[in-house]
Length: 194
Image (tube, rainbow, N blue to C red):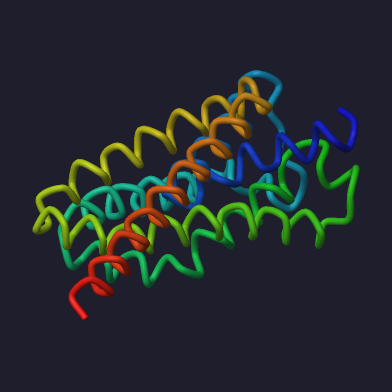
């Protein structure tokens, strides 16, 4: 795997952590443990495949899935995960097979941190907008869609990393555009009221 494809694969795996930290961590640990699609994690990140870590990740995923569906609690959940999601992205990028051998582990961690952090920033910024415009009714639906995207992108990152990276980049661009448009409309309405 050359350095460019390693970087693309790292982005494809780390970006979904910005939506849900536990899905890609658990999937990566399982893929490594059962040697699915020749997926490997480099040491020390291969400890994600240890039984006790997989159980802990499963419990944390269960909590996250329910906490993220409840208005107001999802906002608190996003605040807590402001550190966790980017860190998970950094771990995934640095631990992915081929990445650590190709580039410095610190650089790999920072790239993963940036990928997951930017996705998390869009999620955390858009969730209050969704709550305000739907009265909280849209939160569980959007959260379920985020979980579906995180699962899909994670599976793609393990099976076809380049496709996952492109998918996450497109989703991120669309989300940035939607948030930008909403804020532009809001500014225009406020200007018209004055």
